[in-house]
Every structure is written in C-alpha cells, then in structure tokens.
Image 1 (cartoon, rainbow, N blue to C red):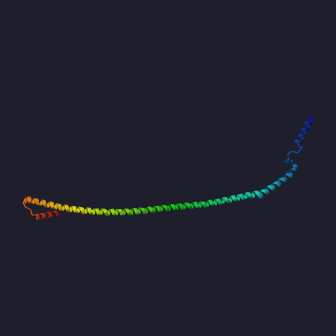
Image 2: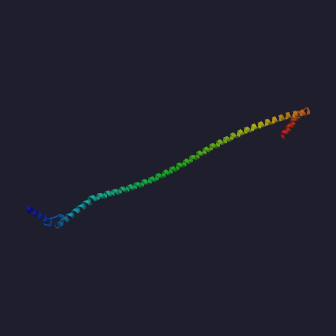
Length: 182
C-alpha cells in the first residue's frame, strides 16, 4: 500500500511539473486555433451589432431626438400663445379700466347735471320765497306806515285839541303826511 501512495504522489508531482497538460488556454500549441475562433466570434458579434442592435439603437436615438425637437417646438408655440394670451388679457384689462373710467365720468356728469338742475330749482324756489317775503314785508311796511300815519294823525289832533281847543283835521293830516315823507 505504501508503494501505491508513493506512485500516486509521484504522478501528482509529474503532473505539476508539466508532464500532464494544464489550462488549455495557456497551451501554446492551441494559440492559432484560439486566435482563429476569437476573430470569428468578434466578426460575428460585430455583424450582429452592426446589422441588428446598432440600427435599433440609432432608430431609438433618432426617434428620441425627434420627440425632443417636437416637444421644444410645441413648447415654443405654447410660450408664444401664452405671451399672446397675456397681451390679450392686459389689453382687455386696460379696456375694462378705460370703460369703467368712462362710465364713472358719465355717471359723474349725470349726477352733476341732476345736481345743477336741483340747485337751479332750489334757487328758483328761494327767489320765489324771497319775492313773496319782500312783498309781505312791503305790505307790512306799508300797513305799518299807514298805521303810523293814522296814530300820528290822531296823536297830533289830540295834542292840537289839548293845546288849542279845536283841531282842523285836514291841516293836521297834511302836516303829518308832509313829515312822514321827508
């Protein structure tokens, strides 16, 4: 048994020193064959990539670029529409303000016209009342003047009668009338 273990140990040592082949990739006798199959595999991968995968990738990139370009154009259109809408809004707002100012001015003018009319009517009423008052005052003044003349005439007659005994009514009335005039 010892001899079997020794033979096995020698076999393993011989294999480790190169008597048995190791990794086939590192065997120099197969390098030509390996290089050929490497070239064939690379050519096949190149053909598959250039005919199938790369055109699909290029189509996706082109579609993506087209989508981006279309989206940018749509965004520019929407931006222009937004600016246009803002300008229309500002114009409508300015028009509404101008209309409101016009309506306010018309309303002020109507109110002022009504106020002027009311003031004119009030002035007419005041003038009519003043004329009536002046007429009443003139009547009262005339009545008071007549009353003063009558009282003055009576008083003068009484004084003349008291002083002289008899009074001439026509002469007393003429004297009172002359004195009240001037």
